[in-house]
Image (cartoon, rainbow, N blue to C red; front, side, top):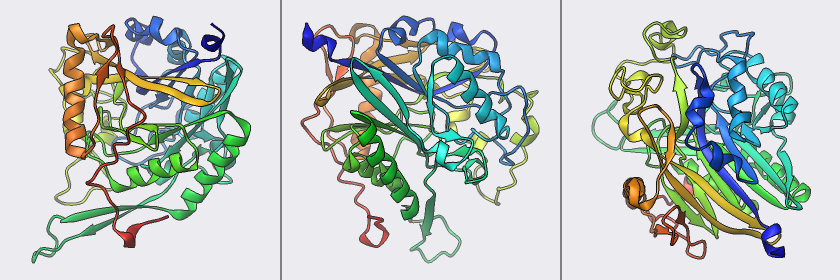
Length: 407
């Protein structure tokens, strides 16, 4: 019994977009579960403010979501919210500062963005069961408009450089290789943050905003930085941004969730009459022959009108809730609860008997393509997957060329 008191349960989810009326109703099937954890964490994907100012010229910049919709985070039991994603500065500084102010007043910790670069890098610190937890969040996707500086509100970030190689006898053709390289300065800053967080807390969890929208295969920088975070002492790494469930890896005993996928993601921002419709069809960064962002598979409507406010592809309805337990010695167990986003856009936990195996099968397919060797084992009740933290699953397909290593 004494041991049970010293074990803290964490639940983690991916992207949350609350750009629809009555957002609380979309947590109907998960609210009790989320509230029951010692710590619940998720990512706020869209900017919330009543003082909007378009600040990102990209075609997929998001309209402002209503401030009152943030109450859905509190109602659902969130303790920590990451706010440093690629849309965080789409509506200027207040799209960051107003949510931070709301969350602070309502007892919810934030990380990943702030009034300047130093504040954006500060961890969210909370205490549960006599243990202190530190949460850090980094943007690896851009755009540069959302980056914090010493004089500007924005997110904590690590800049990623991309190199394209074309080995064919066809200049201007599609690349035969793409290399993604993390800026060593950003890595050094992250190293300082994690090491300082370890001094202030018993457990460190790192969130990354990373990956390619709708894509579940990994870029090299994703493995580079997630592994580096674990090497520095992070006990678990969670990633979001792609709106698609992606691979899981065990590296040095730490679980790395490369793409948590959608959770509650309801928005009218892709409707023909949306406030950002003009931006959606004017891509200042476009180039002849490049696929426009709104034509990515993940953003194609499922069945127009069938699931209001859910403008994502069918496969994006596969999602999970990460479940982990910590004791004084560290992470003692990890796994996930398979979920399916139903026809009312509500994430719904599944058991093995009522469809959970289909989500696990979908995830296992991407594990195989990534070269991981993960065994997904159900608990005896068939309510969640338990991961074996004793077996590392490092992929055989993602070894970085030495010339591009940033270590």
